[in-house]
Length: 363
Image (cartoon, rainbow, N blue to C red; front, side, top):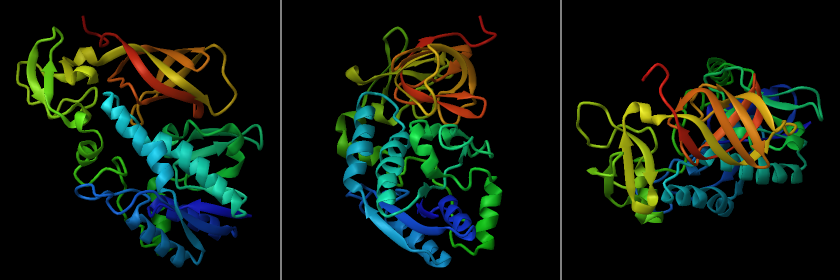
C-alpha cells in the first residue's frame, strides 16, 4: 500500500513514517509549506510546517530512505487559518487555529493531493486512533496516551475520510514514540514539542496582532462587574477568559478575566466563582460519526487540556445547547466544545456563549 505521511519535522510524524516503512508500505513524505520565513513579523515564526520544519522533514526522509516532497500551501493557510485567527481575536474571541488547519489543510487539501499522487492513505503523527470495522463502522477515538491525546483537534474530520487516514502513533505512549525514534537513529528523537500557536513569533502572538489587527493590541480599560474602571490592559488580543496574570491589579482577592468586550475595547474582571458556567451555546456542529439524537448524554471538553465533563446535549440543526452536570470553568467563545461517548469522538462545535453558574460547594 502506498501511504503518504504528513511530515512536520517533529518526532511524532517522523516515527509515523518509520513505523509504516518498517511495515513494508510504500511511504512518501509530504511537508506543507505554510509560512514564509517570518513574513516580516518581529522575532520570526516557528510554524510546524515552516522552513525549519521543512529541513527537519527532508533530513528524516533521507534517514528513512523514503521520497519527500514539499507542497507550497501558504495562500490556503493564510485564507483558511491565519485570517480567521486574527479576525476572531479582533472580536475578543479565543480561536483554535489547529482545528481549522486540520479540517481545511491537513485532512482537506493535503489528503486530496496525497490521493492525486497515487497514495491509498494519508498518515499523520497525531495522537488519536481510528477504531471499528471499515468502511462504515470506523470511528475517531482518543489516543492510548491520554496525556497526549489530540482527538479534540480532529472533531471536524469527515466520516467518509476515516478509511483513508492512519494514525500510527495513536496506540503508543509518548515515551515509546521517542524510544522508537532513538532506535531508528532519527535526529528528531529529542526535538522539543511545540505548545503554542505555530505561526506566532518567538515572543508570542503580539507581533502578529500589532501587524494584522492593530485594534486588538490597543490599550483600553479594565472594568469590574459594576462597570467601573479598575485598570488598563495592553490590548484585548493579549487576554483570554480565565486569565489572571498580566492584569496588574491588586486587592484582597484575585481577579480574573471573565469577559472580553471587543466593541468597547474593554476587559471585564471578576472573582474565581464568576468564571464558572452551567451551560454553553455552540454553533457549526459537525459529527465524525452518525448524527446523534436531538437530546443525548455525553462528555464534553471545552478546551484541549480540560477533562471530559458529563453533560446533556440538545441539538437544533447546527446549534447545540450543552448543560453540564457540574459548572465548568472559563468557557471561552471561539474555542471548540468536543463531545465524547467514552473513547469515541462524537463531534463538536464552536462555542458562542455561556450561562453563568456557581462554583460547587460555594454559597
